[in-house]
Structures are given as structure tokens and as C-alpha cells.
Image (cartoon, rainbow, N blue to C red; front, side):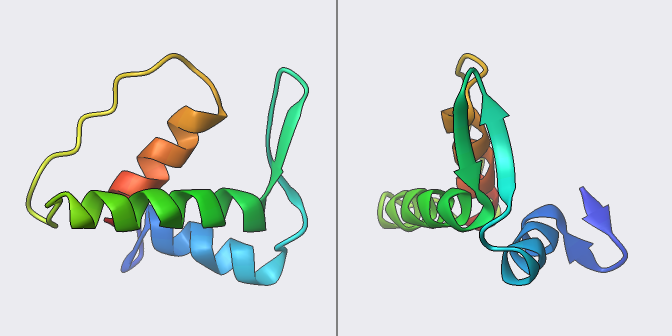
Amino acid sequence: MIQGDRIVHEIFEAQVERTPDAIALVYEGERLTYRELNARSNRLARRLRRLGATTDGLVPVFMERAPEMVVAILGALKA
């Protein structure tokens, strides 16, 4: 999940800066822009940190495929 010396959530955030209003995710008619996906994953990351998530800890993600799964993965990486 590393490209060069950047981690996947850093690559994602760079894309958010380049194209914030572009569609990042489409699932069963639901669409999220890069800006919306970033905002949702940032909210989750903040909550995970408040709950004690650390860089050396694990954050399990067990969900059905849906936009929330992508939010959860990005949020866990950012936490």
C-alpha cells in the first residue's frame, strides 16, 4: 500500500487536492466525490483516534461491500 515513499491515504489526499469535485466512488447509484469521501474518512479517523487507535494498532474492518467500507478503510489508515 506504499507508492514510492507515500502511503495509500496520502496518495488519495493528493488526488483530493487535484480533483475535489470529481467522482471518486460509485456504488448502486450512490456517488461520492473525492471531497465527500475525504471528509467522511477524516471524521471516522478522528473518532478512531479518540477511541484509542494508534499507528501500531489494528483496526479491523468487517463489512459488506458499500461506500462505508471504503470510508472505513481510509479512516483506519488515516487514524
